[in-house]
Length: 289
Image (cartoon, rainbow, N blue to C red):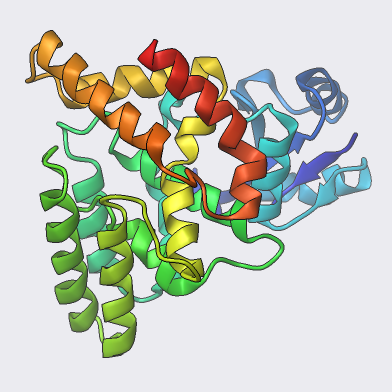
């Protein structure tokens, strides 16, 4: 049991803020915050936002400083993390920080992708899904960082989304080819990112395709969520296809679920199988029933 604190990277109100979390319970977190004089209004679902000027005091009181991604992993592992879909705050800042770790200096491309992922008609396939896939890549790759071209594959894999299976992935891949070439990436890297994006149409990477396995497993990680999380996922998917009648949606969704259950393997990496396979099969079988 411990209290953790990430670096002050989040700008607001003329300063920068850090996140304060517990890896065991909210009771422990609230008790630490109260003893440190952190106001209740600084609590945000699963963490406290604390200004940069308080960091030394909090570390002296026992908070353990860690990198931002380590803090996120500890929060996820604790079971206390609140899914991004339940949050009201914008995801622009956390997504910008992740973008700058792979494509620094390309702000215009980031803003274009952010706008695409934030389109009004997206409910499941929006920014929260993008963040979830990026976080899943972290889990699957730890203790190393996920390869840059796999991360870029995640950024582009649903960059075009109209709810047309196959066509969306193809148009997203073409968008990646054009925009990444303009950004100056080597041709081989551009080609690899586009290839990975196209793989997310059927989630069937070939044997030995470690990068394809990483992205496909991260994209399907939502299937292995807890029942409440899976129910939110289903509700959001239904909203994505609100223009389709109930009967047609039910038939189409059943076909998707059967295809997923027929995938062998459903998850390709050993880590993903450990994390999500059993729960995914339960969720899919329960949905089909």
